[in-house]
Image 1 (cartoon, rainbow, N blue to C red):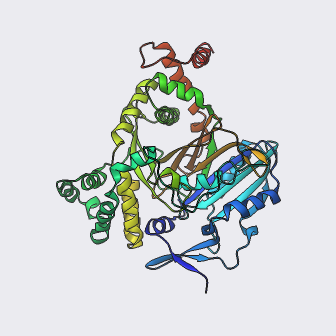
Image 2 (cartoon, rainbow, N blue to C red):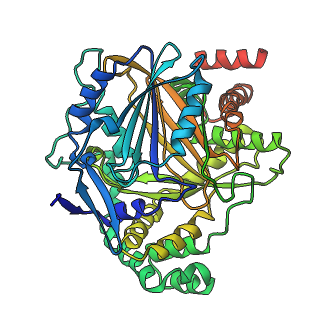
Length: 485
């Protein structure tokens, strides 16, 4: 009999979350300056990807229980596919292929992951990776992918092999400090989440019950009440029932040093700057479509890592979610930046991440109907899932070829039909977007606005001398060029 191991409650929730209109796949794309050889790539996957034995397992869901089952007939040929782009093999052709793969479910009779090695892309190769969310979250999978890379064409590995020993957190470690407010909160979050098993989604259907819950006191119970009383997100063309077909697009990267310089000059973080550019791009897209934007706020779900960074390589899902308001209605780029900064600061110390993780764990062991109802209730409160992952700032190589760019998308859930991904690599910031074809059939019209929104921010900072800092001379020179051009 094949080896079986019970799937954790949270991972079970992600396994059961699949819908035809929202597949629970994390999709990644790597582009290369040169050509990747298939056999060399296969060797890397065998040695550095399959060392995580979980990827040899099939997730099996049965009424009341889910488990990992070893694939007794595992064949790498089913998981590494060699294809070529048609015609000129440019970005448009690759985006079309990625869109098709993002809309296609993985084979449930095999381990739920697949790599497509793509030839004829811009004179080199590309790699499209699809991995089901039940195996791990985005933070862990980024670490897995980076563990497959080298610091030079022939090595050595860019990252040390993941240790199987528990790492000891260093005194004053940033991740440990950030986790301190949540110490002891996980059990409480799980208890609160487990009450949904008994009461269903009553508190989402009856605001009076949520008010009563808030009056019980305590940070976690108050946070749960806030979630229950949170109004539905603004009705825009970004919201609606998603269909099967998706559309993926990505922009030319922004220089990370310039983003940092603008953030320093305006007293904001890199994350604040990038999210304000996202808000501006979404605003301009709606304006082009003739939609009203005055006073508009759009809510995004933002994943928050809840594992110490030294354990980021561990598979499984250990993250929570926060609801972030994006001030789409603000036209002035600096004013919009400061509104984003204020909204982000208001979320610091929030128990939302711990609570949402607890809710997922609770519904993962409860009836699937309850999970569907809860996700439907939560998805009404947001229009997008937005991730921002800092990557390595040196060039990396995979199977001997230099990685030119890398990007990924996490899945959406319920009726959320848009995902925004921001990833920094080798001194650049890559924006990428995935949308539902029926809601936003032209994501490239959104994505091409990120760079102009950043240039607006630079220009405004240059022309207004009373902002909270001074621009780097090189950044100021580029901003002056924007103003003159």
